[in-house]
Image 1: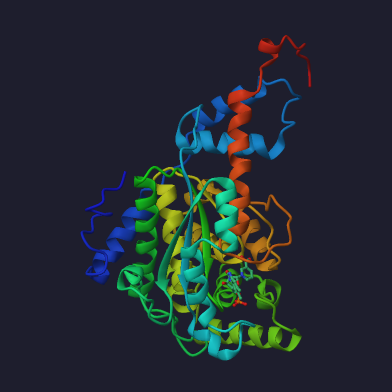
Image 2: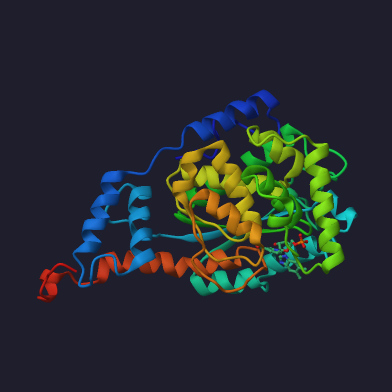
Length: 372
Ligand SMILES: O=C(O)c1ccc[n+]([C@@H]2O[C@H](COP(=O)([O-])O)[C@@H](O)[C@H]2O)c1
Ligand SMILES: Cc1cc2nc[nH]c2cc1C
């Protein structure tokens, strides 16, 4: 478990030197372990004994096994659920890559705090909290305490140079990890990723293109709703950013710094911390998937802690999930972000454990067993 005073060896993230951040990040990445195979197999035996043909509950059975492997017990329990919603702005919006104006990031952030946004409704529906963090909104918020975790006032324009320095990217990763650790300290043991950030499908597509090797055209979508000409411009901007920054897929922190985003980096950290602390984390749309693919580059074992949710309208998300060995589980044609698709998955994960806990066995129900 993390302690609130010392976090991966650091007393205070904001005052840490670059070298201290590097060491803390190494500790986080290196501390992620493989799943408990014995617990996983034990869960499969439990589920196999239920009154149904073998494997007939499909993905629910996979999720039950995964949770057993993550928690290291054949009887995992979900105590508390939360969506970690990271907010950040993007300098690249000056290139006309989004249909929406930048100020919406801040306006939506207040909506999350007030409880009236899509994610608030869907999280409430699932009995989950929404933990909203300003990791890099461009302009000041009403109260300084709301900006306590802000790393920078939005990224720089990645089409003209690096979006962030390596130090800023590491600070954003570790801040996201800290937020996940705080949630876990408060009893949360099922997390979901969420975000808001006008322009953030652009760095997400850029990261997915570099890390998967798929073309920019294949991974770039319309985001908030770009028309045809603007979509072509967005693709040109992404190609230019990848080229000007000389991105190397084998240098994931540098790549994230150059063509990523603050909220994406914070989600990378949240995924790594969840994995480090043996907590499952549900992924949302293309932005979460870009964070997940970056986390997997940094710590391949973190993929075992991820649960895919919906299939975003942004095709890049499918390609990123495919590279992670994951499949979208819900086909709802959603593209809102915020963690809305991930929140829909909370009840599915809970249902998987209810099967293990509440369904009768062949023996209990006196149902004839056979080769099925
Ligand atoms: O989650 C997704 O797959 C998704 C797809 C399209 C748009 N979004 C949301 O819309 C914003 C980014 O869109 P854009 O066009 O500004 O890059 C950002 O706030 C995201 O939360 C999210
Ligand atoms: C209104 C609006 C809400 C959002 N939520 C996440 N991204 C968003 C983008 C827009 C434009």
